[in-house]
Length: 231
Ligand code: ADP
Ligand code: ADP
Image (cartoon, rainbow, N blue to C red; front, side, top):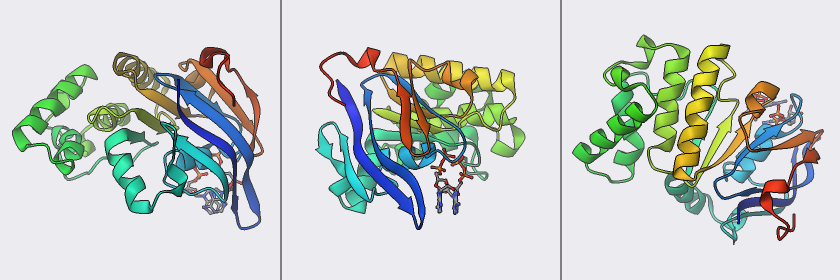
């Protein structure tokens, strides 16, 4: 079943047409790479699907609901409970340890301190960075920081993880480690992943690819969505 979809979505920044009536959908538990050259609209699409940006026209449905019609506060509440985000870099709070960073979304969601700390440690362990629990981001490599950021994005067990060039600042080895952990954690939790990348080696980690060009879908493989899906 489709968990999130954009239909006929249009978005312009002044005279720049970023998305020209785009229709895409992601299935539950699917890892979908959104690819294409720089400036083709990948980030804009991700921000619209995640409810961070509003489309000029078209519809965004999450679990069948027209979330693009919701208020900003409704959408931000939904993002907190249902979505996780992972960006290129600079997302950890520099004054907090790895464990505190990962516990933060739980504390903001009302989870008690002791429980949040224990869950944060479990996630750091799952992502192979348990030994970094007490370290500040400034004391970690870029790849280690991204694994901690991934733990923080997944700790609330989101339905969808939105990842925008999550390995764009990492070398090949660190990049592989982050992507392998992302794929494994996502499949284990049945988390849908929307993975924006311009890099074919990154896209290869996805189950399926949607290629954009100039604000439109150039090519998409709908095989995994099944025949009943009208997109
Ligand atoms: P990609 O992620 O594929 O690089 P983007 O979605 O970032 O593409 O950008 C699509 C187009 O919209 C590009 O031409 C870009 O310059 C433009 N754009 C993106 N964000 C803004 C913005 N905030 N203001 C003006 N133009 C923007
Ligand atoms: P990415 O492609 O990784 O999203 P960008 O450099 O395209 O990175 O965009 C970084 C930020 O700058 C985004 O918030 C985007 O909306 C904004 N942006 C991108 N292109 C433009 C533009 N032409 N004018 C103004 N802001 C832009």
